[in-house]
Image (cartoon, rainbow, N blue to C red):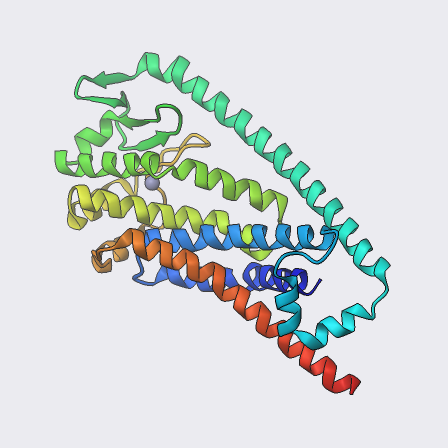
Length: 315
Ligand SMILES: [Zn+2]
């Protein structure tokens, strides 16, 4: 039970404290991909720690590593061994019931979202594909005859980009390429799926700060990441000028699509200061690893401190 408690404390620490840290990272000059990896690792760690705690509570004998943890937190384990067996069993049953209820909510919201997304994709396949024009050398872009500049991407197999003729007439050719590169970055980065997962988790855990704040924050981070990819394909100055040109054209964007996004001020600033560092994949892995291991150690320290305090009080 000691290990389960440590995992639950770790999950709680991440769920409550991580959002503020991660939102501050978004406003810093850190690479958007690293910030995105940290958000995803935080959410994964809360789910992993929580589910692992329930599995350990339900384990028939001592779960693996439980003995080692009991040795480290010796005093707490002595206290819990004097507790009545039904307490541990009740906790295990309550944990299983909670996990099953949450799994049912995940399935419900995920199915509802997937149906809505499928309807939007059908609409584009049946209606937009008929009225839109395709260029032979840009088969993944559907051009709509509209005077205002706009572009958005639709996920699928394969995904595609919808853009207006106004985008071509309002922007230079290199700025238009930057906008298309931004939309293609959403498709290649699986950003639609990431946003969908965040939306579902926010509906399942509306009172958990990490999940409740993730959709808005992650949408900002993926816009920054797409800008970075577009800047790589063209240049930061070109992306900035394209962003500034389309910022005022507020056309409504279909649901379940990703467009040029908001947060223009933040994005223009990031394009000016964003460092073009190397080893980005390594940095993402390191950020994810730190995000998962740091709360685990913090939780161990918290349980150790409380255990020692309990020892002193009992003695
Ligand atoms: Zn975008």
